[in-house]
Amino acid sequence: MMHTFFSAVLGDLLSRSISFMIERYKQQQQSVEEESLQQLHRVLLRIEAIVEEADGRLITNRAMLQQLGMLREMMYRGYYFLDSFRYRISQPHAQDEVGDQSPFSPLKRFCISTRDRQTTISEILEKKELQEMLGRLKTVVSDMQEFVVLVSGYPRMKRQPYCSYLLLENCITRKGLNFLLAPHPPGDERDIDVLPIIGPGRVGKSTLVEHVCRDERVREYFSTTVFYGPDSIGDGDLAPVTDTGAIKHRNPASSRQSLAIIELVAEMDDETWRRILQSLRSGDHVAPVSKIIITSRSNKIATFGTTKALHLDFLPKEDFWYFFKTVAFGSTNPEEEPKLASICMEIAAVLNGSFMGLNIVASILNSNLSAQFWYSLLKRLKFFTYRHIHLLGEHPRDLYNANSGRTYIWMHENYFGDSDLVTYNYYQVNSARLNGLQTVLTSRDILTGTVKPQAAKYEVLEWQSSIPPYYSYITQYEILAQQKLMLPPKRKRSGALSE
Image (tube, rainbow, N blue to C red; front, side, top):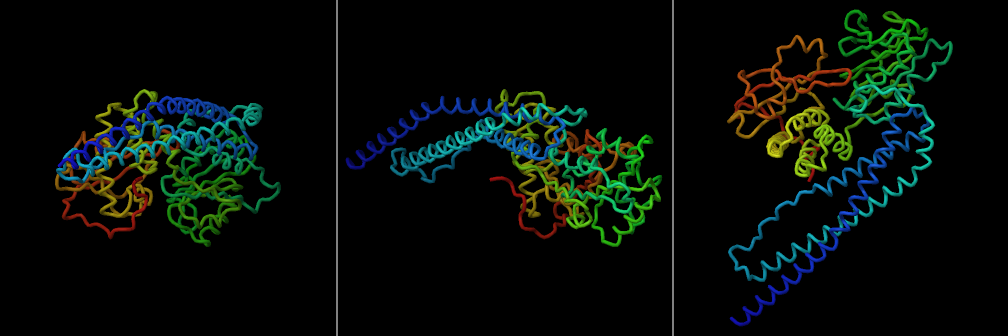
């Protein structure tokens, strides 16, 4: 008995000593950590100021554009690191599997002490990463002095109202502009310059094309800009412009040839492409075309190009977080709402880079800056996403972007009872066609549970873009009993949630 008692006392003293040293170390390091975070924030603000200033200048030097892209990437990574450090969530530790042992149990005291040491080691590693990130960013800023001087020598660009909301890499936009504004060889009426733009569904291909085509220099350069969508192309026979083609812009003062925009959904064979080129060269529908931008999800169209294809992809997590936070908080400073910012980071991780999810969910969050509301939405999204991956083997984002006709599910705990909400036939419409639809429900109604549908089948307005080409995205919904839901075979998980 005496041996057990002394063992318990010594073990308790050892545990208390370790806890005291850990707590003292934390207090000493806390002020150093806070100072490092403030320095990191100040450096990021300087980088952000340089990026915004450079974005407003008409930079034509390729090396400088490459430097600007690298600087922007470092800014996104820095903000992601800073916010992760600030808003990291202390997850509750798993309960110690020690049963009903006495609080003097040496095993329990060992578990507690080990856990504290593991936490301290983790914090030491985080502080090391903080100092490394701070050092890298300071080096970047010191190397940017010459860049800042050169940027100030370029003229300012005329800013379009929506430019600050365009979630596209600026250098990619400028590559498109450089292609369009490059002079066509004089007297060469036979060849057509072709720029392929390739990327998964709903990554922003149409938005990029619309953005460059609205540039005043492009409008002045071409006499006509004409758009051919999937409905305008048969087996290579282009529909008349007055029918399904759309003349996006005319400039009678320009004597130059036309620009054609071709948007594909399915793949196109070589023979169909050859017939399209022949039709556009002849000028059967508009003035002879000198340049074409063709967009598709298929890498095959890269072979149609006369120049290197532009590839668009989804935003990395650092870039995604930067824009998601901006839209979700709006004019509110996230630093003043650390609890909301912490929940916001969790929601961004669940969305897994979904561009559509960014716009839908961030706008919902922005409408109600309540921690309770945000946490409730986080729980719904987690429930839906985890169950979706469990049943279908894929993250909802992947099926959204593929739009392959397969069924996927919006499911909410205790919302539809024993039923599942099945969605299919995801499509986009322009503003004129939207006015003719009888759509009353929105994705906000479904996600927040504020409105319960009365019919078994109905259409929902998922999202209405506020930037050109102003598409609205519609989904057909159906409520089915769970036992009637026909699930496809499970696939290998892709795009799983971040650990």
